[in-house]
Structures are given as C-alpha cells and as structure tokens.
Image (cartoon, rainbow, N blue to C red; front, side):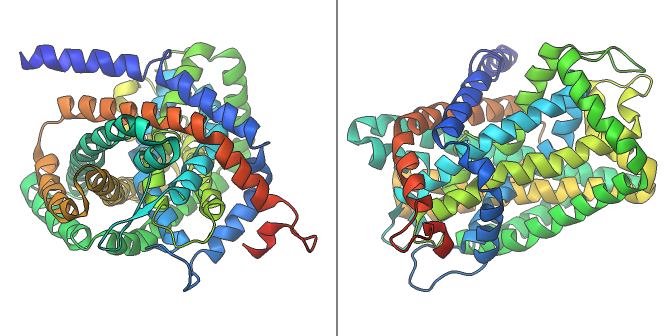
Amino acid sequence: MLESFARLVSDIDGVVWGPYVLIPLLLIVGVVLTVGLRFMPWRELPHAFATMWRGRRHHPDHEGELTPFRALMTSLAATIGTGNIVGVATAILMGGPGAVFWMWVTALVGMATKFCEATLAVKFREVTPDGKFVGGPMYYIKNGLGPKWKWLAALFAIFGVVASFGIGNMTQANAVTANVVKLGTDYGLTLEPWAIAIVLLVLASAVLIGGVKRIGLVAGTLVPVMALVYVFGGLAVLAANIEKVPGAFRLIFESALYGHAAVGGFAGAGIAAAIRFGVARGLFSNEAGLGSAPIAHATAIVDNPVKQGLLGMLDPFIDTIIVCTISALVILISGQWMAPGIGDADAGTLTSQAFSTTMGEFGSWLVTTGLVLFAFSTILGWCVYGERCVIYLFGHKAALPYRVIFTLIVPVGAIAKLSLVWDLADLFNGLMAIPNLIALLLLSPIVFKLAREYFSPSENGQPEKADA
C-alpha cells in the first residue's frame, strides 16, 4: 500500500514539475510581468542594490518587524540552499552545460516575479493582535482579489504548511546530518546521526522559538557570511584557472544552442534536455513564483511597497546569477563532469570534487560546510513561512505551538529515511505556486501602477526613487 502511494505521489510530482504544467507557467508569468514592468528589474538593478545597502537600517516612523535588509536575508536564508550546489551539478549532468544558460533565463524573468511578490506582500499585509506583520500570497489573494477568492488563499496556506515540514524542515535536517557525517568521515571520525540530531535540535530551538525577529537576526548574520565565504572560495578557484573561464562561458552558450555530445562519463544532452533541466533546477533554486519569499518580505519596515519589491527582485539575481553561476563555472573548468563513469547519482559530490581539484582538501571542506549551513538557514527561513501560513489558517495564537512542533520535527528529519517525504515535499512546494501565479497575473495592474508612481518624476522634477 505504501509503495503504491509513493509511486502515485512520484507520478503526480512528475506531472506538476514536468514540462507541461509548472515550468512553462512560471516562465510565462515571469515574461508577462517583465514586459509589463517595461524591463524595470533589469534597468534598476544598481538602484536595487543601493536600496538594499540603505535597508540595513530603518526609519523609526515606518511600520514592520524586520529591517528591509534582514527581511531579504530571511528570504535568502530559505532560497540559498542545496539547489545552489547539488542542484547546479544535477542540471549539468542531466542537461549538459547549456542548462546553466536556462538557469540564467529563469533568474532574469524571475526578478520581475519576485518584485511583484514582495511589492504585493507589503501592500496587502496585515497586523495581528500581538503585533506581527503577516503577508504573502494568502493575504494579497484575500485582500487584493476579494472575499470570493478566500478559498484560493486558504489552499495556498495549506500547501505552505505541509511544504514547510517537508522541503523546509525534514529534508534539510537530513541533508545536514548526511553532510556532517561525510565531513567527519573525511577526517577519520565516526559521527552518530542521533548525536547530530540532538545538536541540531538544540541549535534550531535556540533560534526558532524566539520567533521571526530572532530568526531575522540570525539570518541577517549567517546568510551574508556563508554566501560570501562560498562565493569568494569559488572566485579563488576561478582566479587560479582564469585562462579556462572564457572557454567555460563559450561551452555554456554553445551547448544551449546546439546541445552537447557524449564525452567521458557524460551521456550527452540535447537542447530540449538543457532547457528542461536548466529551467527546473533554476526555479527550484531561486523559488521565483512559488510564493514563499513574499512571506518574509512582508515583515519589512518600509513606507513604500516598491522599496521592498526592489529587494525582492535581488533574490534570484543573488541566488542564481551570482551563486549558481560560480558553482557552475567551477564544475565546468574542473572537468569533473566529464570524468569516466560520472552519472546523475554523483551530483551530490560533483561540486565538492570540482572545488577539490584546485583547493585540495580545503575545497571539499568548504563545499560540505556550505551545504550544512545552507540547509540550516533554509530551516530558519521556512519556519517563518510555515508560521505565517498557520497564522492565516488558525489565528496568531497558533504561532508558538507551530514553532514548537516545527522544532521537534527537525531531529526526526535528521535521522529518518526520506524518499517519500522528498516527493511529498517537492509536490506541495510546487502546488504552492499555482494559487500564487493566478494572483500575480490578476493583481499585476496594481504592481505596474505602483512601480510607475515610484519611478515617475515628482513635482520638483526629481524621480521619486531619489528619496528611497
């Protein structure tokens, strides 16, 4: 019975994330929003980074819970994860180097999607009786589309709660355990999974029980540090092999246009495979359109929704254009993806091996540590997402019980066998996107209007953004 259910879940998951449902829908919505915004996310990228820098502090008269910067870091905590390391390797092994090009495409159109998500999240957020600022797809569906759409908002919240325990908790805790055990083995140590689970429980409870402000504080420190260490490590590898970097870029573009023939242990991949796996892994990595990130952005202390929208659009740029690209280039210049006998089952270790070709043992340590920290930060970010969904469904008094249950589930995920959990988590993560994408299309005129007003000249002839 359980095996039949697992096969059913896997089949449904394959349809939802397949080439005919979610992937084209996410891309189409991203393109529509990019055109509707007149390519503003690309044109105003420098202004967005300036807004992020200023967002480290907030005006005392503005409303919210977290500084704009910490709200972004909380979102990135859940976004930057195993997809940036293992996901990139999977895309290359299954779709060839050309898959990286399509990951870039998802990020470029995803910037408009996340701008709209974050803007709507602040525009239609609410304040609970205990002072929490709650927002996200369930709130902009209810408050933006009206009462007759409340069923769609509830559907998103239900999907979000289920996904939070899977993709945002158990699978991440399991990844932490697996990588810590591997790191210990590399140094001749035998580490017991149950001991790692206890340590993980203590660390998670110390952060999660404190609520969104403590999560934002930890995420605001942990995410920039871990991302910078990984990025600079990758840049060091690229600098040491600078003569190979132009060739890696050429390989990406040529493979995207013509496919890539079999070489070494790589089985070869056509253009269709490059598109399929590049788009799928790109969307999995940056989560543009899934509806999770706006829940974090809704907590920002800002006076104009567009300001947080600008930070929201940095999510896919930082995650995919910067972090994923560095992973991809290191893999390609190392040549490990063409090693004899290489296959998709080796995706988990490919990035580590690629770093090790230049940095030796330190490269393996860097990637493994990065995976552990990325997975732990994802747990923090998804606790916020799940809590906000629970508050929408059951009221603000359900927040603390949810955080307690979420925390207690962490050690279970750390030691459990998770094949079915992975499929369920992936399925509900994908299902979250459907209500959100419907809302984004229907509410897009509001976002377009807010963006035009923000960037339009004011009475004194200066752009409104100058005062941002």
